[in-house]
Image (cartoon, rainbow, N blue to C red; front, side, top):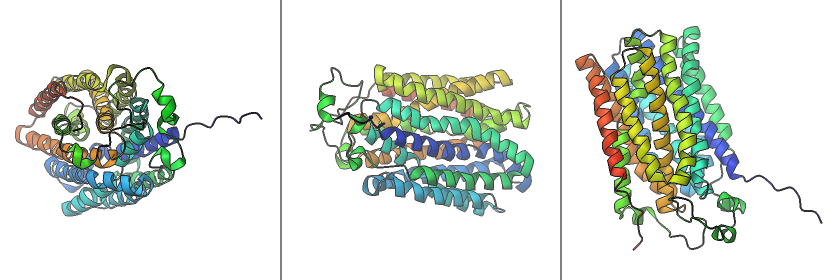
Length: 418
């Protein structure tokens, strides 16, 4: 009897679904900087107040990553992400109707943040569960949705805003985004074992016959895998050092996404062209996510991460020296390349160090503490701008923090179970 055609590995369908979810969620999220000048002009709210709303949003959705990671391990990503889609779309729709700051803080800072908390950690934890040998590549492809979203949706938001006003444009993005995320969530399955499959589509016996381990990866597909729980991971120095590295870089990672468009306007760049600076970040992020995952599978996660953080520091210095569109857009492209690479390696390193069993809870725990620091970056930058009339101090501070984080990466060592 002739064997039937080999079916494609379902893990790649999971990767495609996560790509679509991250494309919409982060594309809409980082369109906030495009809407901010129009919101300020209509309402009279200053940049510090508008930055505070985004900071509350980032803090809430980051800190709740610990809960969404645990829920993903317990209930699976489909239910978690579907609930997130409803809350995110509803919160952004209410944001488009806000007439007072407290309404903005409630709709964006709480409701939309609750929804976003059920997006990033569940998607990345699910991809980590499906892949070991090609984990970097799979995470790079899935997280490139983040880059595509940055590339395409902020310019689209600017066009819609010019045609319909910021309120209607924001409402359109909110409702369409929620629908797309809901459809993509239907594809998600927690891990390959649920479908009678193995990580990477490779049976443990076949995986053990390979001549080399993936660079920096734990043999999570093997029966002898060390089982890490969140409780045991918290007793390792590696977890806390990882948290320090990502806290330092995440503290300033969202500052450009909120303030680059206003910064470009301050340089005299036209509004629609200024919105393209976020698109350049997205283009760089897309390349960084696709390249860093595959490169780290060969060169190792830590070496690749150290290079990404160093490039991110260089990008901030480029922003600091920008006095024209040419250097600004070049720095935005470099920033996207670096931050896309670093963000992709974050869940990959957690999965490599601590395996697949409790990756949702462990990654969510690290994310909750490290990424919640990102809430303060846009707020600090907005405050420094209002006090000094310039973003120069914020750019220099951001470069210094990324260089310090790159140095800490050199101290990372794989945890050894006791």
